[in-house]
Length: 544
Image (cartoon, rainbow, N blue to C red; front, side, top):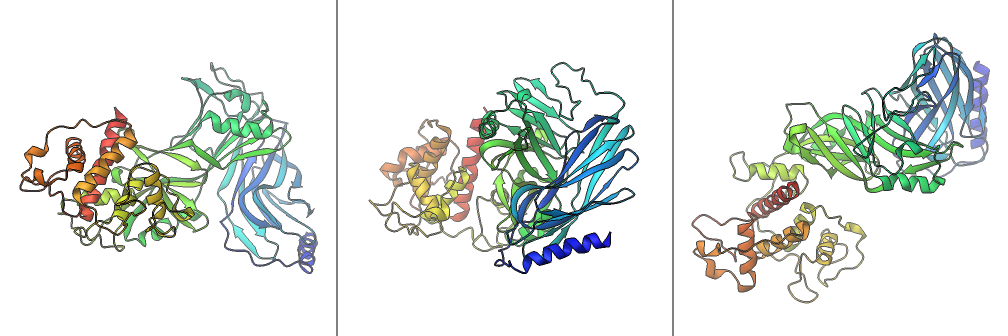
């Protein structure tokens, strides 16, 4: 046995005698899973299990170690899937060790791929488990990494074929996940131990798909599924696989990374690596990556000690190795948080509790800033100072509007600005350009925005009313409320209608002493409260 492993090492070493590529940049951490051809089978039959990896970078060789239920399963065959040279598996009691490598001067494989495949024969009835205990990955520079994934499957072995007797449920004798049609939605309900579903393409038809576990619900729009079908030729007998693999490694430092911003962060529930693919009978795959809000995640939580208004969904940015906020809509009565996804990745539900040392708990805006910081709408001047009484600039207020409305800023991608005094490279350039194109803001004069100019309270009223009507597509009925303020005559004629609308809709309030103070610069804390009011009013209207 030792000779076989020495031979494998020698083959890899010889390949590098003639090929040493440049050092690669920091890469995302790969993840591995086991994909069986069936989850339910008769005793005496055979099935296969594939070792699959995602986020693979420069994989030249590998070694995988598995454990299996040797009282119910018997290894029949092993196959290397990366191409090159592989040794015969070493089987010791209930353990399998297997390795493969490419040969010759070439770069390793990248992306999502299958490393190896194992064929088992079932020899006794019952539940047989297979676990992937470790993966050693070797890149084209002979550098190796070892991971211990928490990947495993359980195969139910029966003495006869499984038969479904439920109306509307497809048979699962081939290991397919049962699907029930409920209210014109194809629904697959699985238990908390399952990490993926495998559904026959023809069972879904043109319906949306819902995959429901006790902790997570995944809703997939029909157009996402149809996009995968178009890539493979719309095969009826293809399999749609939705994976929701629990992850651990990236979450171990999630709290410490976010706490660098002086926030208390709590991981709520289980983080998942979400993926979606359609697999043809010949092995061809169509993988969904950018889904354009076509996939929705709904996290369920049971923790009663959390602050629900501070919950949000985050994804793991592989490039920066950090968790980034993507949003989330709270349904407190059902203890759920939902978010629409633009791309599939690793997601987690977090409680983000950030306070500022210059905003004590007794401050009238303490709770507002706590919630708005959790939604990543407002930021401090520093990590722990907000400076509530500082004036708000036009650029700052525009960026607040864009974030509060959930608009997708062009950010660093902006190469042209509609305003001569807004540099395309400025931090606010993307927000200003997007808000201008949406008709939310105007310049002070033609071609001039004055980003560092202070925004007044009457200007803020006009902008926030415009934003409300743009988002809701609803008009605000103006009422005569300005006459209640002693300084009503100080409001500019052009702004009087918008100020009345802002007051009538609850988007703004006056100041003590029955004044509105229209010409005063808007304070940072006032702008934050106005954004909170805007988001609350939009939420109320959308809930009607």
